[in-house]
Image 1 (cartoon, rainbow, N blue to C red):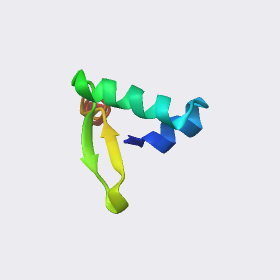
Image 2 (image 1 turned 90 degrees about the vertical axis):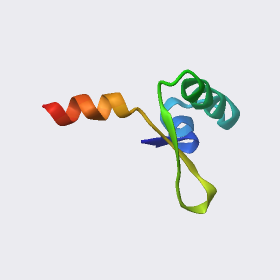
Image 3 (image 1 turned 60 degrees about the vertical axis):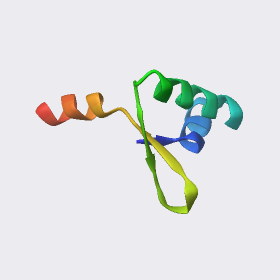
Length: 55
């Protein structure tokens, strides 16, 4: 799971660019949104975790 801040930090992009990117992925059904504490939204690629769990 990642947040907009995680994407911002790891990829070195602006916060607006990070937010736009993860929202585009969510809109395309690639990741799903999950509300975390403090009003933070997490983004999860369930298929990736399912594949890892099979290993």
